[in-house]
Structures are given as C-alpha cells and as structure tokens.
Image (cartoon, rainbow, N blue to C red; front, side, top):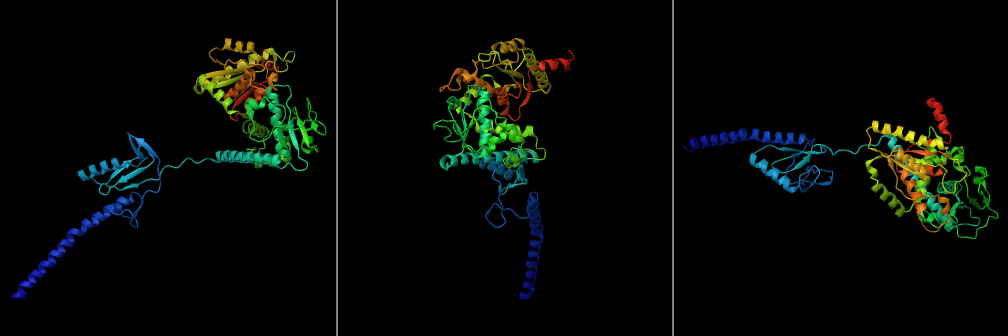
Length: 476
C-alpha cells in the first residue's frame, strides 16, 4: 500500500520539475537574447550589469568629454548628469519601457540607457578633429622650423656675448638721418647678414628705436668706443658688393645703408639649404624667389623687429575706435614726397599718379562688394595732408584715418624720447599691416614694410609715371 502511494507522488514531483524547467527556460533565453541584442547595438559581446561595474567584462566609456552647461545643469557633453539620469531611469522603470536611447543634441555622441540598471554605454566614437591636409601640414611644419631657428639664433647671439673669443666679429647697425622705413630696412638686412655670417649683432646711437621697438635678444646695444679704424663701413651710400659682406675679414662691419644684400642672399645657391631647412622655402621644387623673399622679410619684421607692447596696445585701441572688425579694409599709402624735408625730392610719384590710387581702390571695392564681403572702408595713410583731403573729399563714404599728426620720421632718429610725429608714423604703418589689401607706393620702403608683416595681404604697387602707362592701356 505504501509503495502504491510513493510511486504516484514521485511521478508527480518529476512532472512538476519538468513543468518548471520547460516554463522558465524560454524566459531565461529571451532575457539573455535581449541583453546580447542590447550590447550588439554598441558592438559589445558582453552583458552589462549595474550590480557590479568592476567585474571582469564590464566596460566604461574610455573618452573623457568636456563639461558643458545645458538648461542650468552641468553635464558632460553627450552624457546626462546624475539628476537627469535618475529622472530618465525612474520614468522608464515606472512605465515598464525597454532600454531608452539618448541622442546628443550636437550629434557627436549617441548613447543607450538601460532603464533597469541606469548604465550608459556609447554607441559611437566621439567626433574626430579635422585632419590637416598635406598643404596645411607643410605650412605648420615650416612655421615650426622658423620658430626653432629663431631660438637657435637667440642662443647663438647670447653665446657670442658671453664668450666673444680672441677675435670677435660683429655687425654694428648705425642709422642715418633717414626715414623709419629706410632705417628699419637697413636693420633687417643687417640681421640677415648676422644670421648667415654668425656675427654678433649690435645697434649704435639709435635711441629712438628703443622707445618703440625691441629685438628678442639681450645685450645688443653697442657701448664700446666707436671707431671706423679697421672696420668695413658701408657709408651713406653702399658700394660694397654683397658677397664681400660674407667673406669680410674685418672684425667689425658698420652697416648704415642698403647694400642689396637680401636680393643677393636669397638668389645665391649656397644659401638655399639654409633657407630650406629653416622653413623659409614653402615649395622646394619651385624655389620661387618672391615667395622666399616674402617669408624671410615677414620673419625679419615680425619675429625679429618687434613693436613694444604698449605701442601695440595703441594700435588695437585705434582699431577698436574705428570698429575694425566690422569692415573689409583697403589700405591706401601715398608717398607723395611733398612734405617738410622732401623739398625738391619728387622721386616717389608724379602728381598725376595720385588719381591711380583712388581708381585702383574703387575697383577693389567693387570686387569686394561683389563677393558680398563686409562693408568696405579705406584706411588712408600718406605724407601729405592735401592728398588725404583730396581722397576724403572724393570718397567720404570710404575714407578713414586715425587723424594723428604725421611728420617725416628722419627728424626723430636720434631723439631719446617719444614724439607725436614718430608715434603717428609707426601707428599708421601697423594699421596698414592689418588691412585686407593695400595700394602702396612702390618706391616707399615705409609702405612695403607694412606689407611684409602680413603674409596674406594682397597689394597693388604704384610706380612713378604709371599714370602714363595707364592712359595708354585705357586708350585715352
């Protein structure tokens, strides 16, 4: 009787066990399938559990994203804050919803939120920065080479000062009673000679230079007893062949005037390797002289000859008053030669050439307007008040000027304090540098100097007598 009872009970237990297995197995498989499907959305083959994030197989986003503020809540870009995550998790749990996907508003990162665990997993990699193309990489590399050379030159000059040796060689810049453009141009040539010959660079009797500019060097003021004995001196008008400046055996070169050294050095094959390895040749295959000259002159006038910070602040103040950023600027630099100190030296322009500046500026203004640029303004700089008033009267809608009092800078070369005239001269030159394009006097070192500082500037140069050629071209 007992055996009869035990057998049905045993059979019943087996049936209950089989029923439980058959009933629960599809649910477990379905749950597993859902978890694996969730992870497959993010290219994962692991199950993520909020219970133990540190276990083997659990993963966290590897990218640290910048913090931003949205709707008053500080978040990590694309990742919700704790408050936002809790709100999303609670809403999803209460509604019994499946995993919720959150889309980053910036489109940079998409994430999936598991409502049950609150786990956030990235579905895409964060956006990559735009890669530079070959040309852009080349420009960046050249700039780095130039900066490395600058530091090398600075270090070399320091060594020449500290350890002059038995026969120290120097090049001494001694300015003439000349304009700012000429004297800074002579300094630029002298720096290049110093670079190529490894001579120590020094400046003598140029007090006004230090009131406005500086070089990134130390101890470059010549304070020894000045003598031309045994020195190679250019004099007021240089007649020394440029190659002799390279091979000069004299311990001192006294450099006072242009010797056309820049043209010589940049065309001389023996210096091509120097220019290339130090980032001055943008395209080694072309070896274009004009491009090389542009890079070298820009380096000399921006990285070597530098404006004092308070002077640069003055430039920025004037630009702010003129609302510089609101306009497309065309610079007009007219060196008429009709100012005090220039009497009888009309070597820059003919009177008829002045009209060409306005004609060229009008043409460039039309082109800028066709390109739907910003409104156009002309920054008019010149040595003659009459010329400036002529342009202002003809085109008042374009005319702009800082209205400072300009005078020939040769008067202030040896002045040991700042003057209104020199300050105005320098201010206008740097404002010309910041224009988008310029119409300049070709024979003016002052005007060309402004263009050297801006590698992207378009320029039109007006030569003396161009008005006659222009009439022939126009069929007048």
